[in-house]
Length: 118
Image (cartoon, rainbow, N blue to C red; front, side, top):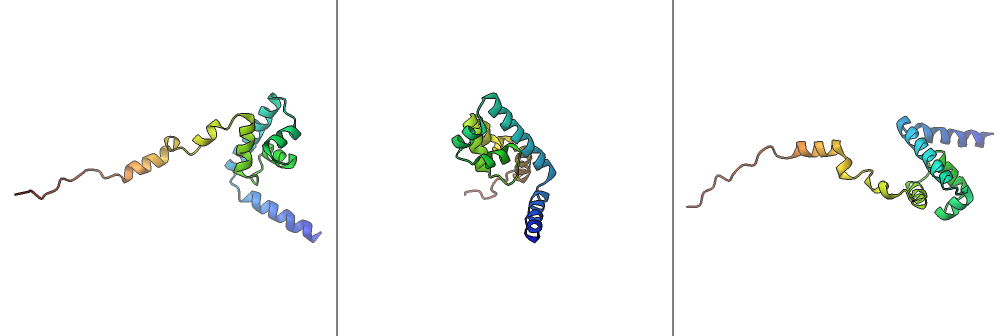
């Protein structure tokens, strides 16, 4: 019984440290992955084998578990042929805030040298 409490508390602690918006995003991503798999009529066992994952890990991904690795999510997307946009997630052209902050750090004007050659 004490072992069960320790395991349960670590699971609760792990999931409670994941921000709610991230949990929602992962759940949606997992559902989208499941829907894509079903549209392609790929059984869980076949999908897991193609991705080199266990069926349990694939199930966790489809349920949006935050404990699954990004590599596992990416591999599943690759098997489905949906990995193309993954590289653009943090691409600089999509980072509006980062670009604005970078622009604010640029010098406002460039000074000419005051030295003149004689």
